Structure formats: C-alpha cells, structure tokens
Length: 94
Image 1 (tube, one colour):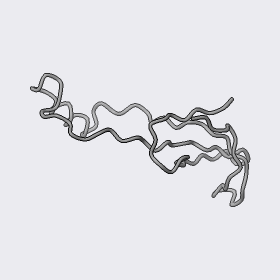
Image 2 (cartoon, helix red, strand yellow):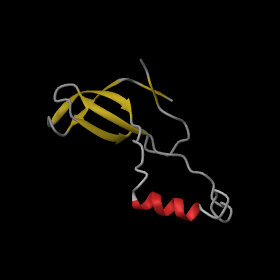
Image 3 (cartoon, rainbow, N blue to C red):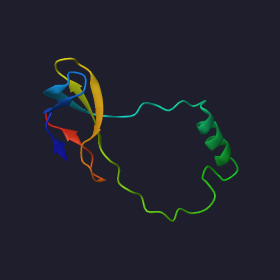
Image 4 (spheres, rainbow, N blue to C red):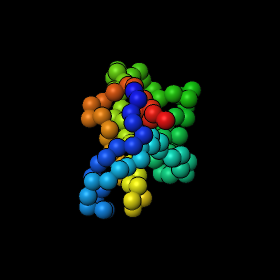
C-alpha cells in the first residue's frame, strides 16, 4: 500500500497545519533481560522450543503506524495512518 512522502496536517507543537514528512514506524529491539522476556524464555524451556498447546486464534492484521515529522519545528508524532486493521505493509513513495 503506497502513501505519499509528505502530508499537510495539524502539528500540536506549532498549533497550526504544517507540512509533515512521513516515515514508516518500526519498533526497536526488545531488551533481552527485561522481566517479561526472561519469563517468556523460562516458559519455553521444556517444550522443545514451543509453548504447550495449539493456537486456535487466527492472526489479525496490524494497524499501520506512521511517524510524522514537522518541517517547521521538526517534532515527531506517531499516528495510525489507516484506521482499519490491514495485512498489507505501508510503503512511502519516493
């Protein structure tokens, strides 16, 4: 799904509509020593690398997050670009 690389939208920091540069948001690497990750790794042990039981839930599409950067104040804000869930990835036009 292709989206434009600039968009004219409201900036809460400038308090007016300005042009924003769009980039696709990608989350960073998770910390391996965080409590949740340690707990999950401990739970995987003893089941041959998989959790016990079968998954009965069908995978759901994700909401596509976009990082907007204001051209005037260069502040960043995150926004869900397409309101519905989708399996297609967002691609920024060059």
